[in-house]
Amino acid sequence: MSSTSETLRVALVQMRTGRTPAASIDTAAALVREAAQAGARYVQTPETTNLMELDRARLFETLHEEESDPALAAFRDLARALSIHLHVGSLALKVSAQRAVNRGFLIGPDGAIAARYDKIHMFDVDLDNGESYRESTAYRPGEQAVAADVDGIGIGLTICYDLRFPALYRALAEAGARVLTVPAAFTRPTGEAHWHILLRARAIENGAYVLAAAQGGRHENGRETYGHSLIVDPWGRVIAEGGTDPGIVLAELDMGEVETARRRIPSLRHGRRFEVLDPGHAGHLHLVEKPN
Ligand SMILES: O=C(O)CNC(=O)[C@H](CS)NC(=O)CCC(=O)C(=O)O
Image (cartoon, rainbow, N blue to C red; front, side, top):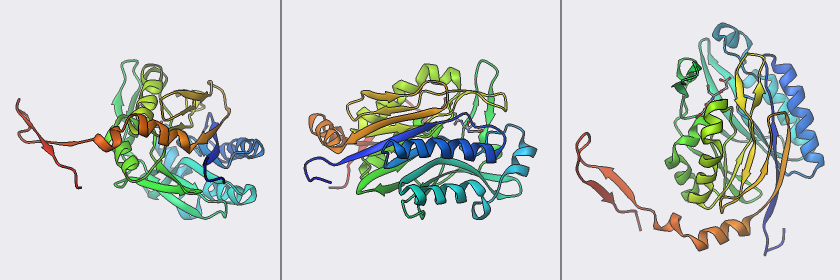
């Protein structure tokens, strides 16, 4: 790596995960191999790479615990075989008989798990097209933001609905992340309305690359997801984008672009914090001084 330009070749794997983990693992693995052959050093797969299942009884019959999960074992072998950083956007994993986690893994080129992240914000939402989700009835939310390292580049780990909570991304950027990741399974209507603009906003306000591998199309469980895996640069430009079908999306990240964006608009440095003094009333919000 030269001292003037720090770069990272990345790929997103877009999928249409079904109800059989073995098939999902095979599909994902083939696309990860294709990405590695195209020169990607970091490859990200979408939310719930292993399984999309709406039937709760069947979900818990199919899920494994982390220690015995076949998808995690297969992806660890694959990362090592290809010598890449493999970010499995998330796996649905059982933590007890009736409780699951929506957990992301960053696997290093040695096959070791470098970071784990449990999705914090649960998608408990009723859409006006009749789609209704209660993620929190099956999944236990995470309680920690997680930043990790890929070849000396800080990477923030988030998942899907987290995208709507900008304070998480600000905290990750302040912790040193220059790349923010949002593996997702967005619904079609909310994706059409909000996907691009929210991803671009997170990139712009933090002067960071945003990488979002997506689920797309009509799934075996009947759900439809938005697709459009996206790579956004720190100035907010979309530099690569997927469609609705499975495939890979490639880009070369240049960390000089992060430096340039943050020099042009130093909003990370200028940010202040506010505290509600008198909740529920019109009034003043107290400006909280930042340390230093
Ligand atoms: O449950 C699965 O099978 C996979 N997981 C998901 O699809 C998750 C939880 S239901 N989806 C979202 O968070 C969509 C967010 C979204 O669409 C928005 O914020 O607009």
